[in-house]
Length: 512
Image 1 (cartoon, rainbow, N blue to C red):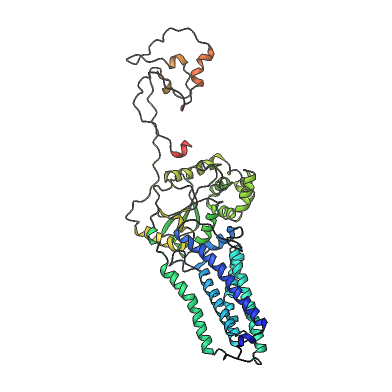
Image 2 (tube, rainbow, N blue to C red):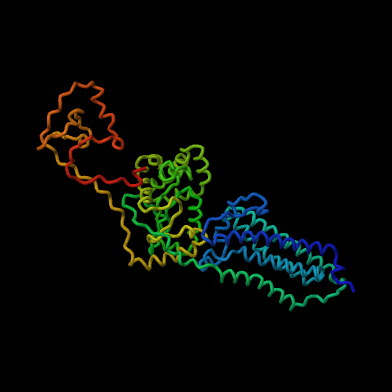
């Protein structure tokens, strides 16, 4: 007797083929997304596949990077570093759709009401999840990820084909000849249990084999000095009382903006008193960068310093307009200052002033004193540094643990203090006789060139200068014209200088 599969209408076969193809496409997109997520478990920076045909068309990783690093890309982040990617569960669901569609095709059940109804219900799960994630991606994150769009489209096609299968089965089921008994309710229940196993086994296996990064907590360095009283340290957000967190940031840094968004969602945020130290990656004020990585960041940083208690308002405005400020500053270095003054008019007399620049320089010198890396953001809790790899995917896992370790070690580590101010040499005592060496002449004193270079006689009395022909006026001014401290050569046999404190070597900031 011919099987039911041989009598199945072509329409049912085509719909089953479309159902299976949608499952394959969704599985492929979810697999690439899972691969990108898992690649970051080595705590390094990796490229992200973001294309409708990964590996065959150009990647546009910005939207996919935003969604991958967002708190919506995984679950259980507080218990597992990075959490369990939801794309892994999506792979499992699409794999079950493929299994069920192939089974219906091979067994000739494309016109069976119960079997096709179960196929339609199974497709509702990825379709509902896709609808929620599409809203989150477009509305909450403001990003469009091509891999995600591929998953959304695959889910929609699977649902539509499943519904059409079910509707066609309702029309034809009563008059169809059966070679196989329809699936009983118990069989459908068993199929549901198999579907659950499709999800639980890979997800549970991932959780069991996820690496433990607890040993990295608190091992990435610490501050050597606390901020000095003269240095601008800005208060951000709610001020918890349990521990102090210092964030080294650039107001035009996209990673800093992403960190702020993730940090605000953490339960531990309410327990931390957060301070900001400005570190603009802009060579207009930062001598540690050769090129302006974030053009305009110096002007925005000065505006935050000028705003004082309202610095957070300037920072939020800068985060919201990062792209516009950066692009305008690339074309015109003064654009950022004009834009921030146009928004915050009260800062007009301060942004660009020498006082604001000097305060910003103190922040840069603080980074030098603590030997900080030239990158942002950098986060310290009670002086202990949060590893750079933990500022995105691992933030939910690492930051609470770092705070607990810092609190546990609070009494064991010495409290941070500001770097001691450099000692200034005391003014030398007044001399009864004229100064013999040109190096000891007080600034502004008028001393004839010949007298300034005349060595002193023993006993302190000035020796008479040797007889020499009179020099023209230009020759008399020659020593003054060559008096550059870094390049001037000392006299051939200078007298011994009076005892006094040695000159202090300039700091890294002063050398630049």
